Image 1 (cartoon, rainbow, N blue to C red):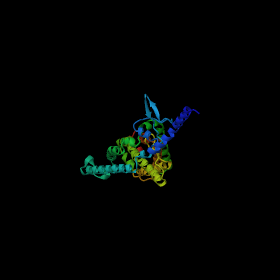
Image 2: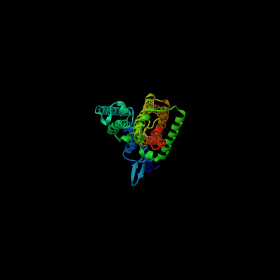
Image 3: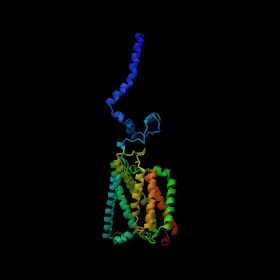
Image 4: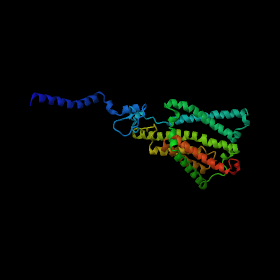
Length: 348
């Protein structure tokens, strides 16, 4: 064999060995690069809106530019921030309590100065305008404090943090309205098969036609929004996250990742447990208005389970709010028909 052939084989052999040697040196110098090879892709996701399509490259072309793709099913553990959690829910309840204190003080001042002709708390409780103003004041104070506070804590918009997702509700609007129709069919069946009181305390608020119109507007436009915010916006995610968090601590499992929109992905057990737990205070909140009758409370519990299912299935608080609002609208529509346009309230 000639010297030229031997030299060529020696050079080729060295070139073949270079990649393996370089890999060994890279691992020794920067072993952390091997631990999380997908890390750079996630750091780019916060600023670039690429979409992962299952390809191998990790990039896609957007116009003339090359953009990193997102990997919604592979969010690093340290990026998982599941909100709202128990602390968030507790803080919102504190804000509601602050609203109760302020509104109660306002009623006391009105009684002391005899504003609006008020003489006693009993008189105020029987007044539909006063009752609605008090509720609106409680909700308004809580919301006024919650929006800037949680925007600062979460580092994102208040409704973004609550997973409002109004576009989802709009896209599913027909399906959601039919869900509300199903809730009303359930309510009619409940009236037939469950014991309902002949005269509940809430009936006293429907004293006049104007009272009925005010209650209808409040029940369709205001109450569903705030009730969904409390129960399906804060409490439901907090309980579901708490369930999964306890399971992770007990088993040593890693936290579940967030989806592409930043929504927590809860286990089935967490969603079932949270729905069952949250529906109880939702029903009990209306107990006094319904005379503590167990028939309508069971019905409200079932309706709450449906609302929780909508919120969890769509991952949209706006979706459950739309169902709740449409459900109330149909209830008042039936009442409107029964009373000849709220002109004969004695027919209720």
